[in-house]
Image (spheres, rainbow, N blue to C red):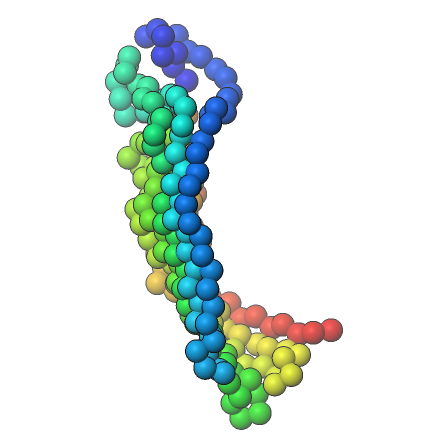
Length: 186
């Protein structure tokens, strides 16, 4: 990366933030509302902040002001809020055990890179999964149709660039996926 002490030099190195502070709250809950229905609600509120100076180079700022201090900012890649909720409904259906599941996960917005480049900001998003299955009453086997990210939400899990002239790269989250799954006890 560019050397912050000169306008013409570069510096190379690897380092770690001296100190990061994390405070928050996590919870998990599951309620059997009915013999056939279970509701789940889980979440985390995470204030993870850089507590010491951590200079990041922004590819969007002109020289010599390409650096900014992340002290006091939320740690990159760590959303403040994550919620997961859903249900599992199962009951006998014509000599078999039928199952319907739905789960949604919400993640609040977060920068995915220390440089806080505009492209590295992931807006808040939801990913919803759905499953329907049929199996034996003794649970020795089940065949299911599973849908992951059924609304085909576009989101990415990483974003990076190394300098103001380097390529920008992102890793996209899994697109909508349907699968048939068979499981059994041996």
